[in-house]
Image 1 (cartoon, helix red, strand yellow):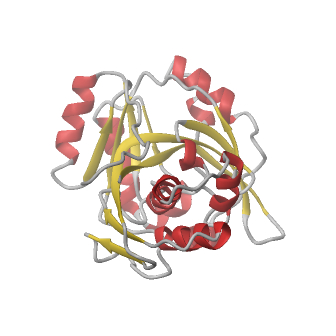
Image 2 (cartoon, rainbow, N blue to C red):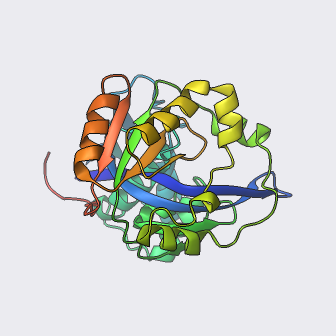
Length: 289
């Protein structure tokens, strides 16, 4: 069985307050993009084993795919095992949600692979035990995320822009970023309406769509700030850092401008380009691979 595990960007990210449980309340728009890891599942007796092409990815119980498999098995009582083959394309520590996406894809794949009968809300409850944004990747698309990122309102967002993501060879710790970020001056609570209006007219409400991590990350890692400026110089209508970095994305109105910018950035950085017509194909595909 083969599953595509797609990345996301954050169309705006406000950090509203620190919670008593140590997490932060946020407001953001998650948007799935056309960049994915590939997960293949094979029978493995009663063992749970992970193999990967990336030596920087842990393969033991600290890996979210492995955690997802054990948690799903513990909750359902199934005694089957699995060999998980993870082919990484999404950069690590880049604000694109690769690890969370891998966990969600593994959960969805194993439900079919092991022949389990779980309702969507049951699978979401399991996902929440793995990470704040894991449940988003169960459905993907576009969603307003509040709370610590787990309260989701999925909605249709026609975005007539090419999305160019540029990632420098730099890994940023999300926990470090949250520990040092300055909280938002005041709650926004209108990010969804800003994004919808922005999608209709890219120059509208630009000043309202920001990422509260940018001042901290740009001061600490000036090369990330430089990428944002370069995207704007290359013709992006709008550019913003995704998550806690290090990736920065630009929205382009014209495919020729977007492709030329992608070619230029790809000489020095990891890039991915998502067309306005992108529709993710994330359903597990059965069969031998």
